[in-house]
Structure formats: structure tokens, C-alpha cells
Image (cartoon, rainbow, N blue to C red; front, side, top):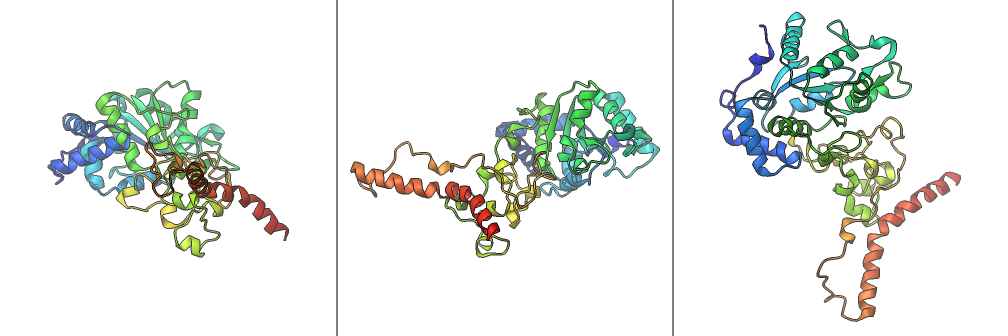
Length: 374
């Protein structure tokens, strides 16, 4: 088998995926990156003609991002991988090994123009000997593949900025792929999709947009797509109404925790964590994320938070004012009354309710200090 990757390619019909389902998943991917519905059909049409080539490298990581991709069910991973993109190199998914899989990588590099997906951190200590694949260090493999790539996508926090391997004391001097590429002077479009793991649809939408339209999503200063990382989790959290009303779980298992109240008091990092976890379900399972199962957000997309800030420690709130606080264009005063005094009283009551969460959060630190002294 000279080109193992090419033998993985098949059309939607051969995999038992209907055209309707095929367009559906493309539409979901398009919506994930903020593109209109017609873009999904365009993606499906383009994929039918030529599947985007993907080379996927593994370095220092737990393979959690790939495992999440494997559990995408609509369609299943076979349709997702084989019908939407051409995976020309992937150590976890390939049945081959040794010289055969390395031959597939060399063939892909000769062709060039692929989307390079990097999963895992890259160690720099002792010339990178703490992560070697096929006799090459992670640094060398990354540079060689990036030079032939059309774009680089760093999936997961490990690849984006170092993740778990870079946690103190960072014995291998692990860093993210963007840092290595910058040091080596590799100038390619680079997208970072931090998360432990990153949502598969964020990756799929980015790859298909680049393959179909030749463009990448709008990126922030850290190379993260604005569609997925433009807002903090706190803004779209399903528990946000409890925060606005001043209802907080005080401890795991208490009445507030069982009733789904806000988890800020027990260390939720949602107010400082940029991600779309609450808006885009993992593997199409509603509630399959930390807050959905009753655990505070740990800030896994943020380099300065996860592995650096204790889980139970509170952080400042980036957007304390609730969206419901904005006045209506045509406010109704029928219930309150028409007099200036009545309207003012109504506004004061609403303002007090909306500000309850803010006031409560400001008092938390003082209350905790008082409890500690007692």
C-alpha cells in the first residue's frame, strides 16, 4: 500500500449515509463557524468533488481530542472522517504502522496543500528528545509538515499553548505548536482550538470552510476563532439566571447544587473562560460538559487559568450585568402604573433583582474571610 490515506476515501453512498444526512452534517459544521445555511450545501458540493486532505500529528497529549471526534454520532465517525475529509495521515486511526504509515506521510508531504492538524504539546528540552515519532523529534516533524501545509490547526489546549504537559514544573519544557512555528520562522495561517478536549464541530467547520472558500474564520489575538471563543461561558450558561437572581450553590450536594443554581461560589471559571461549550453540545449529547453535570468550569481553554488557578478559587466576573437588564424598545408600564413615581419604583425593583447576583458575588470574598477568621 503506497498511499494508505488514499485507500480510506469513500463516498457517502458507499458508507450508507444518505445525501440528506451528508448535507445536514455539513450544515452543522457551517453553522458552527457562523456561516449561513447555504454554505453547508456548498461545502457538501465541494467535498463531493474533492475531499480536503488532512495530515494529523500526535505529540504530547492524551488523545482526548481524537477520542471526542470518534464519538461524534451524527453521522458516525466513519462518515465524518471518510466522507468529509481525506485523512492522509493519522497515527491513531490508521491500521498500518511502521514503514507503511511513514510512507503515507511522505506521500502526503510530497503532494502538499493539506490542512495540518496538530494534537499535543511539543517538548523543547534536550532538543526535543522527550517526544519522538518515526525517529524524528516532535519539533522536526512539526516543522517538516508545516512547511508543506496550506494551513495549521492546533486542536486542544496542549497543541494551542502547552496544556497539561506544560503545567509546572514543566519538566520537558513543553509549549504549543504556534510557539515552535514562530521560532522556526514558519509563516502559515495558524488556528488554535483550545479545550480539553476541543469540540469536534469547531474543527470540522474550520477545515471545511478553508477547503471550500479558501478562508479561515475571524481569529482573535490568540489565533482562536471568534465564533467559538468570542464570548465567555458565563454569558450563555444555562445557570446564568440563578446568578442574576443571587442563587448560588454553597457546596457540592447542597440544596442549591441539586436544584441547578449557579456554581460561581464553588469556583466556577466560566466568567473568565472563552468557549462555546454551552452552545454546541459535545458529540450531540445535551449537557455533556462540566457545568451540565454539576461541576464548575475549570477554564480548560485558558492558559492562565487551568492548571494555574485552584479549582475552588473565584475569579473576577467579566460580564456581571445580565442580558435581561437591557430595556425593551417599547417598554410596557401597564402593570406598574403610569405615574413617574410608580415607574421609578418599578425600575428600582427590577434593578435590585438584576443586581442581586453582582452584589452577592462582591460580598463572597468578604464573607469567606470572615468565616475563616471565626
